[in-house]
Length: 213
Image (cartoon, rainbow, N blue to C red; front, top):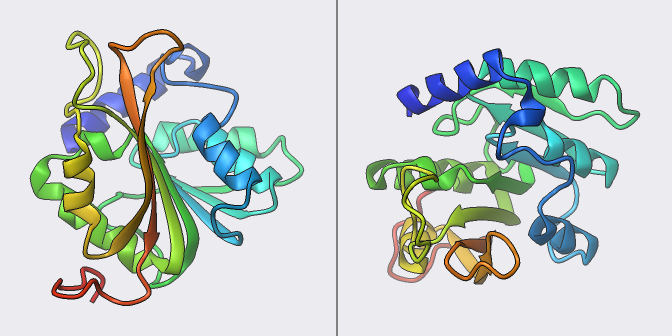
């Protein structure tokens, strides 16, 4: 993760964030639809791997007490600068997704757009445990990852994930609400994301060890 984090830090430090292939001025439609339809909890939100801050800034505009963290100091500086120009400001800080700087049960909503698929299998459980610790019981987690079925090996994250990868990491802590495949671009069936909505269990799954204890 550190090597990948260093690469993102260099990118944010040396390249205008508008030119990054992952940058968008708008929130992902999957997240925006869930928030507008009130399928996810309101209150305090955390965007993990917040980059230039687009999603956290949008959530602040929707009335959330919005926060973002990123491993890259330069990304956090960009997001903070953008937040300074808004009436509803989100707050950003440098932190590791594997050691979230928030207390137990702090967040109503956690979002992660393209971060989970950067973790090795060994670190996915650690990340899941941190999410479960920070989320309130009944709190929601939204993520978007490259699907295992994606056919383009030339570009993309370190890992492409299956539905099984998602459920295996989170099943004892978070309950699946929805997982579905969507095209990276309309009409491109060979390029696929998984969008996933999971919810923090109010009690451990029977027969499972609770990750958040």
